Length: 251
DNA sequence: AATGGCCCCAACCGCCGTTTC
DNA sequence: AGAAACGGCGGTTGGGGCCAT
Image (cartoon, rainbow, N blue to C red; front, side, top):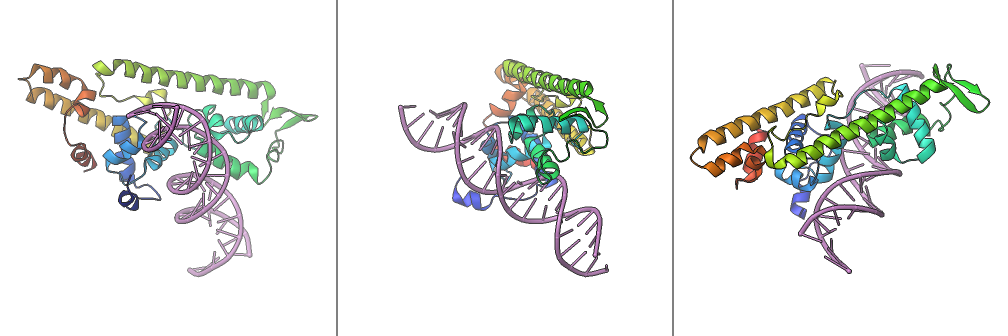
């Protein structure tokens, strides 16, 4: 990225239309090569900025809303165990980001002292130094909830990885427009997330329509027909101007 | 109503490890 | 093998909103 380009990079809060564009391109290109994605999308943002926006806000796998008591407990326990390993802690909390946990920790515990809130709740029950009841939960309940979360986390990671791997293996015979149905994990609920979900559906529809158009307009060419059934190929094997294509998505 | 202080959180920064060429 | 690009991570900052005065 040259100096001239750097000068024109946008910073600060993301606009809704930028979000929309980023979602479209992440779903087309995948969550990787962020610098390239930033370039071809026409977004005047750095690759890092795009990645961060996706990872911390736009990713439909994210859970928005307040941290639950169980999550808070897990954060406390894991922070005691691992320290400021926010990403490591985040992996144990499905749908939460390292940034979110970091902010939550700083807001709720750092100033007050890590153990300050731990044991101050009216429902916390102690046996000497050991907490045996946490905010109305028995020790067994807390442990069970933690283990459930751990299992859910692993299951979701596994399910998603499996889909990604499957998609990777099937890349030569793609039939679903390259869109990974993340909402199938049941973690989309806010209006904004629903909106994003709509965008994703739009892309899928756009691709299907485009695919159909290409298939019908080039019926004289058998090879083209084969390629046109492959949506991933349709987007990228053609020698079309990607910038031009990106502008059409932006409008 | 104005304002100052505080809180929250999105976004940025810089460093470092990993991957790619 | 080495350099460059990329991606991940933890720390920091800045702005908007809320609340007390």
